[in-house]
Amino acid sequence: GAVVSQHPSRVICKSGTSVKIECRSLDFQATTMFWYRQFPKQSLMLMATSNEGSKATYEQGVEKDKFLINHASLTLSTLTVTSAHPEDSSFYICSARPVGGEQFFGPGTRLTVL
Amino acid sequence: QKEVEQNSGPLSVPEGAIASLNCTYSDRGSQSFFWYRQYSGKSPELIMSIYSNGDKEDGRFTAQLNKASQYVSLLIRDSQPSDSATYLCAVNEEAGGSYIPTFGRGTSLIVHP
Image (cartoon, rainbow over all chains, first blue to last red; front, side, top):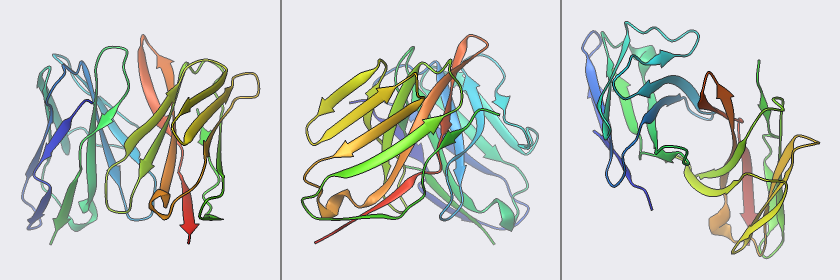
């Protein structure tokens, strides 16, 4: 089956710093990648849709200048949380989708901002 | 606002029973439907996808789709304690030439021995 990796799996940082999360599709090319955030006991919240070679499409209420997304290749998308604050602490999950295919999720990154 | 609705549960069933999970969606233009399983603290994993009306079976899992009634369901036969998880229904909706996934809030399933 399709494999999606995320790195790091867990990160703890100080308030005000920036954190970069990588999402890679290991055995397929992903024209589209998605970034989600999930708070404890809540559903997945789509943050943005990332298309290779173009700007990401952000969902309403998600600050594009705070959550920088770069989809530089067909196998890599990155999410940078800039000037992180404690309220940004969450479980960040990416997913990747080949053309016309199903979504496959990465294992997630747990971010804790002190 | 396109919506995918699920009963949050928890749905509690005894081991060996059939668990029935339901999902309704608001957009009649939806094309593809998915069920994901999510264990606590983990990311979702795909269980089933279904694209046309009717039933689709895979092992102990059966997905059912009724586009006229705008619902999709997941049946789990011979439920096991390891099936205890949150089950997410996802619907792909066409938007500007691409397909945007919308997830329900998930149904928590508890299978007790």
